Image (cartoon, rainbow, N blue to C red; front, top):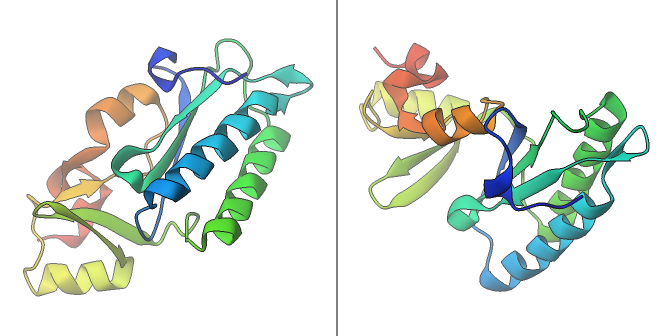
Length: 161
């Protein structure tokens, strides 16, 4: 059951998929339709999941599930991964590679492999104050509070001295 992302409770589980590039306006329209269609039929043990999504910065796919109504199961999570893989193919983007870092450089978003991000740290091109996106968080509450933070406040801090 597709619901508005903003109406999901704070303890809803989320998955964040960063894209290696921004989606175009045309792609955003079809991506919105694709996500709406998938979430409308997404189930766990034949029960509809109360789920919503948003597309921040036209660059991320954030899917949330209200775990208080029906919890996502292993099979339902697997089906969402297959759906995301289909989106990767359809739009020619990378969404599932967790070894990449998305961060702000001025008004722009940069998407770099982790090893390149570490090189940028060593070259002092990024610092503890660089705004990074912590895509490992797993609740809407954490998403709202700790997703977009200075590197010193996320797991990225381990690379910055």
